[in-house]
Every structure is written in C-alpha cells, then in structure tokens.
Image 1 (tube, one colour):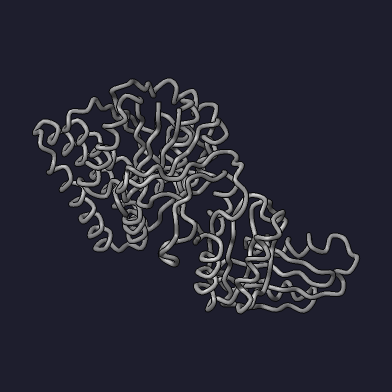
Image 2 (image 1 turned 180 degrees about the vertical axis):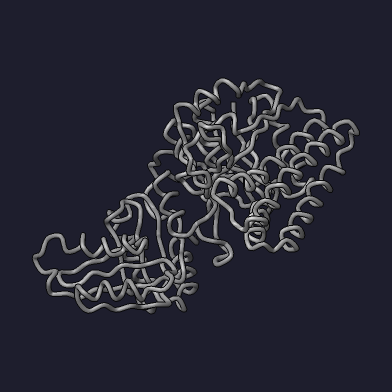
Length: 446
C-alpha cells in the first residue's frame, strides 16, 4: 500500500481536488491512503478568526468565518450527484456551526486557551476531507473517510502535541484497512489526547500524520505532494536555474530544512524513515515527474543543494578569561538558553566565540548579560548560506571552488567539519543573492 499526502495548495479548489483524485485514481491498485491538509490558507484564516475573537472583535472574526464558509460551500455546490452534494452540504453545516459556537465563546471571554485553539484549527482538515471524500464518491471512487483523531494519540500539549507512538500504531492498525481499489481518506495535522480532547501536531503536522500512518502500516512508500517539483538545488525564486534533486539522504534534507528550505521538514517524516519507508516529494501540478526521493542514506558525495536565511545577526564575545578555561562556553550558552534564543552557527578561538541568531527580537537583555563575560559585539544585516552534500569536508576541491568563486565577497564566518554534510558561510545580506547565484553557477550548472 502507499500513503499519499496532499498539501493545502493541492486541495485549494475543486479543480485541484480533481487533479488530486486523478493522481489517486491511477494508484487504486496500490491501496492508497490519502492524507489531506486544509484547503489553501484555511488554517491561517482560522488563526485570524481566533485571534480576532480573542480581541473581542466580532465583526472581524465573523467576516473571516463567512468568507471561509463561502469557499467551502462553493466547492460542495460543484458536486454533480445530488445525494452526495446534499450529504456533504449537511456535514459542512454541522462543522461550521461548531466553529461559530467556539468563536462566539472565545469572543465573549476574550481569551483562547491552547485547548480551544487546537479545537478551532482542527476544522481546516475536517472540512477539506469532507469535500475530498464527497468529490471522490461523486466521481465513482470506492472511498472511505476516517477521522484521524481516532488514529493518533497524543499528550495534552494540544497545539504542538507529542505522539504516543505505541497506542497510535495500535489504533492505526485497527482502523485503517487498506484495500486495493479503495481510497481511504484521512486528515493530517489533527489528533486526540488520551482523554478524548482534540489536539494538533504543530508545524508540518500533516506531513507528520502521513509519516506516522506510513510507518505504522509499513507502506511501500510515502509521497508528499506539494506545489514544487521536489527538493531543488536552490530556491528558484532566487536562482531561476535551480534544478530538482533526484535523491538525497535524510541528513542532507534535514540540514536544508534547518537552514531555510521549506519543501518538507525532515523531523516530520522521521517515523517513515526510521521504518525504512522511502519518502518522495512530488508536484501535484506536474505528476509525471518522479520528484525527490529521501531515504536514510545515500552513496552520492559532493555538493547537492544550497539554502539561505536572512536576516541573521552575529554576536561575538571577546574575553581573555576563555584562555585555558573550562566551562566558559557552557556559561555563555546558558545565557542564550535563559533568553530562549536558538543559536544557528558557532565559531570559536582561544579568546572569542561568535554565534549567529536567526532574525532575533530585542537583544538588549542578552547583550547586557553577556557583557559580564567580556566585550560583546553585535553585527546585524548578515545572511547565512548553507551548502549541503555528503562528505563535504573531505573534498578539498569542493571547498577550494567555493572560496575561489566567492573571492570578491566578504565572508564573516565559516563553519565546516562539525557536520559531515554542511558548509555554512555568513556574508553581508546585501551580497546574499550575488553569492548564492555565483555558488550555484559554480557548483551545479555544467
């Protein structure tokens, strides 16, 4: 069997849902499980409505609610079979009545707990799968709609819940029965606590749901369908010549995701990778392409892709007390932990340490605390470039080509060797696009 996960852009309209079902229809002999995100930007709109209700702004949350309802009801009106259409319309009415009741309650008390927020946000996927399932039935598919809250068990974190994998696997095996010729439709992102309360899985939650299901069912493959051809050698908005990568390791994909690539976040597909289920990233609008395969390892060495992040801030602490001292770095990083700031890159010498922060907020408190250790410098308007590839630090010719191509660009900081798959550079933000285009042409254009 195969698990096919479709993102919000893939199910944004009834026409896109038909494209999804065209893909699924060609895979019916593989007993597909279809995992769907919310339609388009529905989750973002539900966040807007919830925040407006929390402020007591009834006009605003009602406006967003009305717009969302019209979008979903318009999709249902396009269903040809009258009995299927009427049933789906009734299900949408019930769900929107629940949303309205929750938002009204939030607006009355002007407060939204994580539990209530998770309940509201869960409706995006619930609405979408009602429409996907109805359209599948309308087109003559043998379709079964399941509730992912019956499948995935979590703790009580609600909006970024942690999965109870043992109970979840038991539930999935009990409820999901893949059969050739039938499509099983389930929601991504949503789950339920042991106490029966709706929870959500946080960022990348739909990919995570699909990966959990694929792992539990020991699927032949997991396919993440989105609006790009796969993982690319660089963001095509910056480098139009970027190419799709045929295959890459989990570690390489993880580095790209951490340093700015947003096609798929590897932590969300780890359950599948751990079970040896190959993962493919594919394009709903270009289904004939094979996309990118992500697996637990690859024998391919050398540069594979670039990623970038901007703006980045460099913080440097100079102190002679570092010389031959133990525990000094631990005390410095305890300061960052206290301020809840995540460090991207670290470089040290005998008397200084430099770290980078991704677009940080007000750092006055951090700078004041760090000043107790020595002289502190802050450099804003920097950018991070990450070159990913297996065994990069062992290939001196690659490193030489990188620095030779960037000989006219000032490089503030370098990180190489701490990871087997990563060479990271910090350059001025103003030089970022020139740097990545130069590097891409040097490393990836014949």
